[in-house]
Image (cartoon, rainbow over all chains, first blue to last red):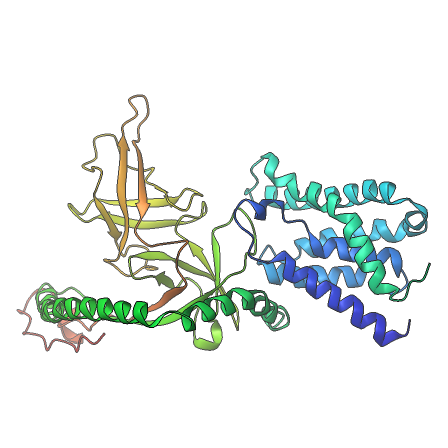
Length: 160
Length: 264
């Protein structure tokens, strides 16, 4: 894949993920809204580890902070750490079956959510309720869908 | 923040579908319903206009009387109508995003109203959009006054869109269900005298120092599309006493002031 092509595809998918992040869900659904940007970043960092690294994760994290109006830098921190783990394990991740990937993604999302919880705790805003962890579960459930969609974007004419 | 130029267009993109639906339902509205709406709006305007006539005279009188009391009186406010973007940045927080930002002169801590009462205040002003914290956000508190007797207190957000808490009133406070709470103007963020909420429950707790009081916000917090961002003039009408009168206060009777033009 040449340079402009992959850059265009990665950027477009992340823009879609950011739109999903701020989409107006109903009040009950918004509790389940997973961290789409992180899921898409995890896919791209495992698929193109030489292109999507910690710096891109940090940049998109900063943009997500600005988009959602959270404490500046919290998404950047969480995304960099999770993407670091993805980069370290990307060779293994490629060998995994979809089910094993789901388990890995679960721990990645959980790590990010733990960092958010930690930062909220530092601001004295944290309330320990189980709803806070729902996005981790929905994100895990959504992973196969994201994997299949992004794979078909990365390899458009995948003839088997 | 210049980074927001990169991501703010996304907010408009996400808002697009609901904006299109709104526009379509407006343009496809039947002739009859539009006529009836127009008629009712006309009637309402007539009623308001007559009330305004009276208000104008009262305001002038108020300026005069306050000036006699050597008190300052704030001029009327300037408003900007902002439209809501239907996006949702973070769960658990009562924050709205509107389509006017620092490009329109919006700044942080500006009060935001709707036709029925206080909505909240500008929490973060970005160039193209700004975020508004509702009065029901758990992190928000607004200084209020009971309209009936002038009792001052603070209304704190409860985290539910239809409820405010008044946690700092003693059990023997003179307050009862149905009392209107208005902004007291203390703290300087909100101009004085706008309706905030109506008290709907008052229960004294015998073993605690403070009573348990809840109120319902007057403004339609979750059913609005247009909000008003308010500039209240920070410089009050000049006092009647001359600058040299400060050196020798309370000696000479103040001359009758020229009432400042109370524009809207």
